Image (cartoon, rainbow, N blue to C red):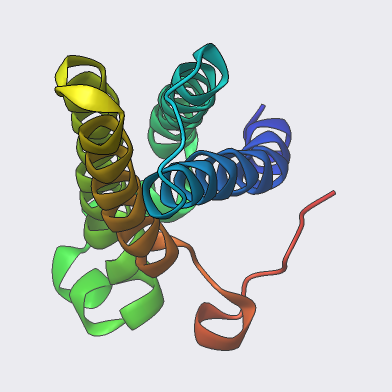
Amino acid sequence: MYNFMLMLHSIFRWLVVLAALAAAGKACIGWLGKHSWTRLDDRLGFFFTLGMDLQVLIGVILYFVSPLIHQAFGNLSAAMADSSVRFFTFFHWLLILVAVALAHMGRSRSRKAQGDAGKFRTAALFYGLSILVLLIAIPWPFDLGRPWLRF
């Protein structure tokens, strides 16, 4: 189960990143181009937040079946000394929760904002911040030695 969930989490992350870039990119284009807010703009935000939620669900399951996490909680002082283990045990999921909260705030606030420019500006700001935190939270191959995709 662990290997399957890890593979699913690895592959699905790129779908979430694509959804994030689509939602934020369309919001920036709409804001700067003074476009009208459409159903597509709302749907892109929906799919971005839905993808984030599903990825978190997969991540929570993965967290509880991960041998790395079990090992880390078996010896917390050793886990804190290893940057990779420390990242996955504490920082990865905390940063992801911040990114998810920003995405949801962006969708909710953009739907309630007054005028098309306000909707686009709000979505662009919150989705952009969410992407920034998301990119910090991703275990990159050049940083933690994790592969781009797991199969």
